[in-house]
Length: 294
Image 1 (tube, rainbow, N blue to C red):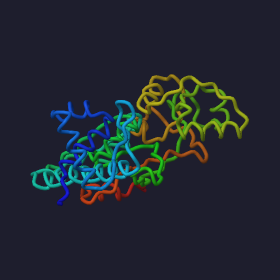
Image 2 (cartoon, rainbow, N blue to C red):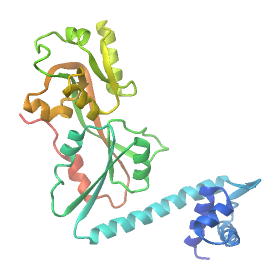
Image 3 (cartoon, helix red, strand yellow):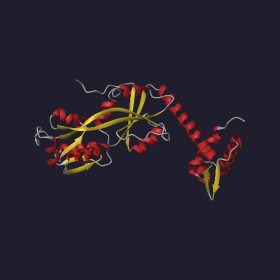
Image 4 (cartoon, rainbow, N blue to C red):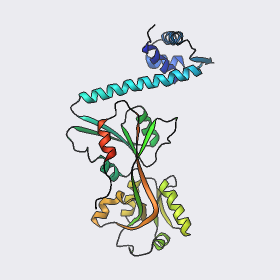
């Protein structure tokens, strides 16, 4: 008996909903039709896929294995359609996700090789790491840019590549603080705009001030680099930031890199999933030279 993928679609719906009635509603068929499809699939596989507890249907061990394979099969199908549609189009599409707090300047620098190309359309989506990871796993995105990589273990499908690492500095208006002041004086006397405690940069900064025996005065704790940029531009305090975030202001002379914070860096990552047909645009983006010009 040849394998019927129609059965597999019904099975996936029931496994996700845990209920025949809800699955039938989503599939727009009768409950008896869904039940029949599941029974036929179980007969084909020679295994019970569900056990009933009250009105709920729970996956058996065989059911969990079948669901893993079903998800992989349908993901491969979506990937095939997206890839072949893209191949036949006049323009290639590059779908990039970036966590909403990530430096806009870094994003622009990363995308520069494909921006403005007449044969490329860039789709840029912003969101939380959880939202973007879900979209990436479902193959709705080609890549996620982040400074907070997801865990890499046997249970996650993500591949993480370090794209860049930049020093973190103390940033402020050059006319309000002497650029010749020692770092310890700047940290001790100036109000500071810091990342929130969930940030790796903040953990490194707290460790630095602890080693120096300092208790800095905190003007603001912010989880968004764009907001930190606005605050330091408005004179709310000195910001702990990678200089790339305020690259334009430093070039214009409205802000200055007052001091490099020792052993403190911000790391940027690209997160992908293994694909049989990876987007050909990604290779050039991931391998571009990001060393600063001499």
